[in-house]
Image 1 (cartoon, rainbow, N blue to C red):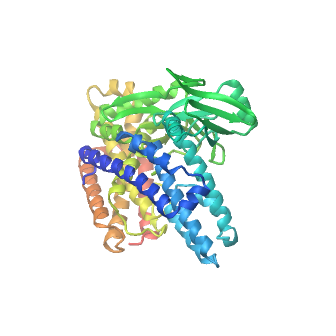
Image 2: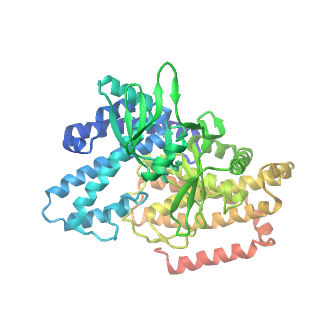
Image 3: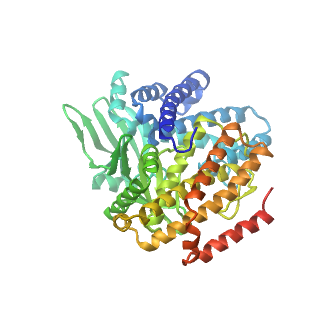
Length: 515
């Protein structure tokens, strides 16, 4: 395994795609053999899920929507099993406390803890009801999304079973996790959206987004209250009754398309409040940023093309960017409170999370985390668990590589022209040198902690130790290539900030380090 070898990552991607097909098959078999009663209770059409799974192409099995759907079904199986255990327990105090601890370690990206432990306390008397409600919600969302992933196939499945209609409850408000607009349907894995007509939107608002898909052999209708509205008909020609909104195409590559989604909007409390259409200005900035990466760092751009397939702008004061392990390829990027150099950096940063998550799907790199916040993070300036430090060290090593490449291209003969095309200026060149040195200092600090975690605590596996070794080698190459930066940065307005950063790291090593 090497950090930047795209050929190895291509093979890992193929293995990942095959594993997702196998996971879906295994989950469906488990429901059929061991949890048939629960499948009936939550109205899970397992044979339909299998048919849908067989329809996915190899490439679609690593798509963020398809992976998220399969992972949600797997989560549902987990909670159905928990539900069975809780029902058998007379005293639920122990299982509630164990489950709360497990949630903190396993489901830190999901909102499941808010469903089961809204107060943060075990509350064993309420556990059964809350688990049941969570399973019911997940089942509804999974069934709805399955129809939207392949509506024509769903109609064919109804015809094959000779059913008059299949009634699927749906909720058509904005989806903040998938970042999809309200009052319509995101169809398939590519980001195509069908927006309901005005009278349908009015009906949906009155029903708070609640409706029912009526799936028949010839098409799909939406039922809201006592009114029925056509969505799509399959006749001699495919006929959609709602307005089609195609995703904004940022670029295509050998690995497929990179699209721009709607904008996720946060409130003052840093929680999602809505999903809005994305402006053309944001698309222009994204294309410029992508062009800058391709020019400055072709190897990094290849990784970006392989691992990122969907970008959603994030309008949130104080929130930089984020991505999810269970939504590979989907990156939420703040391009409102951040300038162009930050945007370029954030694209690589989130892609690096996708990169490491793919490596972690192949190989376990740490034996246990305990969710203990014991390692100082130079980036968050707080204590973080091992997995957080591993992710940060990896992603910010990639960031330092990016800044070094940007400085190299910006300092060349054609540098001024290239930087202007990217929307950058000469001050950005100075700041890129500073950011590179800043990240080198931070990565060096955290690599020492990761070495300690592997050597003394025995928390890293052989694969984790190998990754740390690779990052060390990358850092050494960066240090050799950036030897001339120190004098330039020390004379710049960023010199004092670099000195303060080094002093903070030295203080943290003295007061917060386990070593």
